[in-house]
Amino acid sequence: MPKLVRAVPKYRLHKQSRQAIVTLGGRDYLLGPHNTKASKREYDRLVGEFLSAGRSASFGTQLGDTTVVELAADYVRYAKGHYGTAPTSEYYRILRVIRPVKELYGRSLAVDFGPLQLKAVRQRLIDEKLSRTYINEFVRRVVAMFKWAVADGRIPAAVPQALAMVPGLRRGRTEARETAPVLPVNGATVDATLPHLSPVVADMVRLQRLTGMRPAEVCILRPRNLDRTGDVWLYRPETHKTQHHGRERVIPVGPKAQSVLLRYLARDAEAHCFRPSDPEAKRRAAQHAARKTPLSCGNIPGTNRIARPKRAAGQRYTTPSYRRSIAYGCDKAFPHPALAGIPRRKLTPEQSTELASWQSDRRWAPNQLRHAAATEVRRVFGLEAAQVILGHSQANVTQVYAERDLAKGLEVARRIG
Image (cartoon, rainbow, N blue to C red):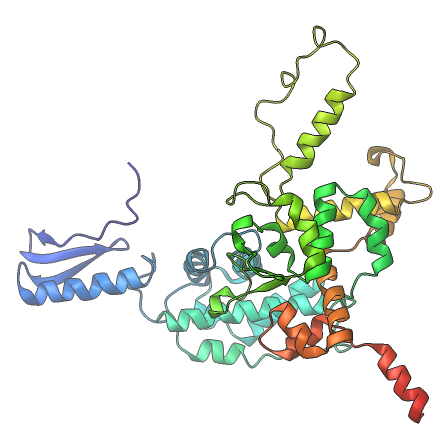
């Protein structure tokens, strides 16, 4: 029979004792004499606490008796409902965080997880050659899990308070790997890549370059999300990164960006503007136009396709598929002088490593377009304008994206230096 995950536990009669009883999380609770007001009040209280705890299997255990693996399972269930399962959801980062914690201390009591245990988890990440900034974010999410457990009445408040005393890894004072900062992509690099992208992805790049959108905001754009009443259109994404803070995201779309979008607006208002299925359909049409075999011979169009392919062109790009399309275009725009034409299966391990390093150094990501747009806006119009375009509530966040213009510093040095 299917598991009833939404049914409210029943108020029942315990025949042996003639008391009311309810079963919560596999445990029986006697409520007092059956069919009395006192027993029904006790039933309401226990059921309310059980439901507020998310029907946790550890409900009813004494404070401090919850194990780390029980706590982690409940936290994953909470995160899935709170953050959702979108491709860029915090939920997947939490799954990654919980894995080493469970492997090392899953059967330990959650109250016994202290600074030494947290440092042991952190050292494991250092040994895996993960970056310092990633490890610090990782540790922050571990502490957040224990804070949630306190708010849910699972463990004493002293546990996350002690974990918060562990300082983050500092640059130059740890063995953790350092990463280079994400810089804006050079305009000439983008121009060299555009001819090697599909027409749809190339227009996505042009639009993001002009507006400073986040990659996800480009991918989910639909005609219905555009207010085209003024000379400058206003794009309001249905979902965005700071939506949970109650903020509205409005992206101005100027004349140049409008000219990019126009060809994608003559479709259903509910359809996404940029769809992987469109260039795939054009590719198949071009193949059919170049066909030399008569239609009376060979395969009839559409008959030689896999019925249920593992991967098929969808109705919208995701952030990862958008990034991969750009990476593929970069590989074609900047081929390795000696290894580009050789199939991967024929490369030696040393050649594969060399080719991967070559491609990694010449690839750029969609977020770098946002950096580049922010830097240009800041250079011309100032930090406040860049803050508005990027949709940040604080200017210090914008400074991470908008690089300072070195030319201004050079001009000052010429005049006073």
